[in-house]
Image 1 (cartoon, helix red, strand yellow):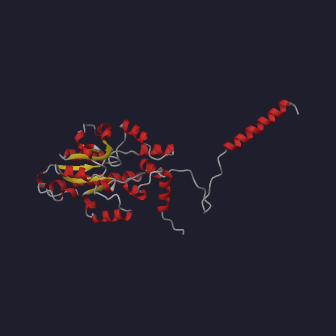
Image 2 (tube, helix red, strand yellow):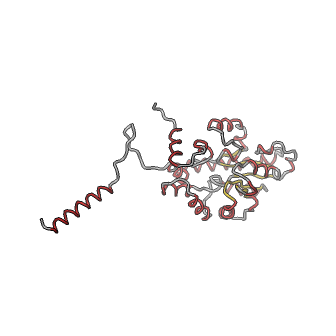
Image 3 (cartoon, one colour):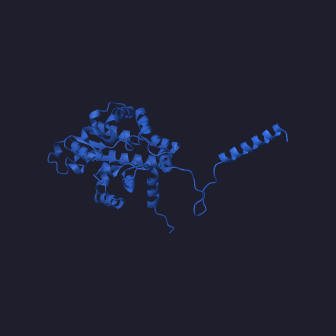
Length: 289
């Protein structure tokens, strides 16, 4: 065989071997025989927030209900939404305010979460910083109309957020872009400011000493009541049920399918993504034994 022909055959062999090595492995199958898919745990939640009419309807109706409650709350001088304010003797004399969370309550961060899906990664601080720096998060449906309605009635809107103090300037910039007016930085109470930790109860107490809190608005149980870090999922449900009357008109819950303290209690003290995912899978209930 000529050397040239040998080289051609060798080249074809190498090319065939290389192409074969680049072929994706055959898809894995579940015990039931269904093809297992490459996906991300945030995929459906992000798509729901970004595309579903149901998300718009739930959020809009929550804020419509909140807006309709404002006049009744203003008229009743002993009305308060904050547990931290139940023993304040000068309640009728305090000026009115509503207390709101920011992320997934006023600002829609699903584009950040969507980037994690596209990158096939878990939370990345640098990606979050880049997103905050853009100050371009859109509103959660109904949030801006509610804030403007409250301000028109002379009600102070105070934002209690677990964004850091270093992120406050860009947060205010983002809020202003949506509201069309200046937000007083003193009305944004961030984590780390005045040595405040992630528990929001001390900040609600800070507001309760200065304002009569008409409504609490948020997407997480911690936006309404202090929750022990050791609380189990069933403990959290029991705590929510003890305040069933407040959910009717004083506590306004905005839907968030992406993340929250409900999720973190499932994998307390775990930090590595594989073990967190395994813990989530171990917690899910199915019907097969």
